[in-house]
Image (tube, rainbow, N blue to C red; front, side, top):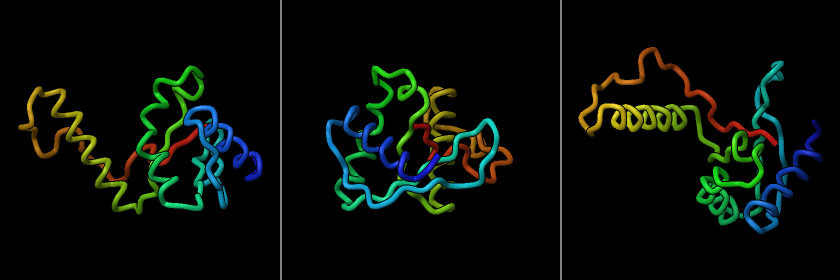
Length: 125
């Protein structure tokens, strides 16, 4: 898929799901092509405000009328590897707390042998 069609896909998604047209400077696919997997798309917007709006409203995609968007499209901040790992570990602790039913969670709960976050910045358009 070319970056032009990625750009059009992101613009269409934003217009349909959020009711606004962002000013996209560029789009590019991240990582290597692997059969059966969709490469995340890094989108660079003209303003920080537009990016913050999309990130803060990303959860609303789970209520989309479009089943593809509802199940497969995720919007995440562009994090460094260290930031992504920290965010992943925080999610593991939160999920473990929900499982254990309290905030007193074992230090290693849900994080055994974790070296990298899974599916950070994943997107499907």
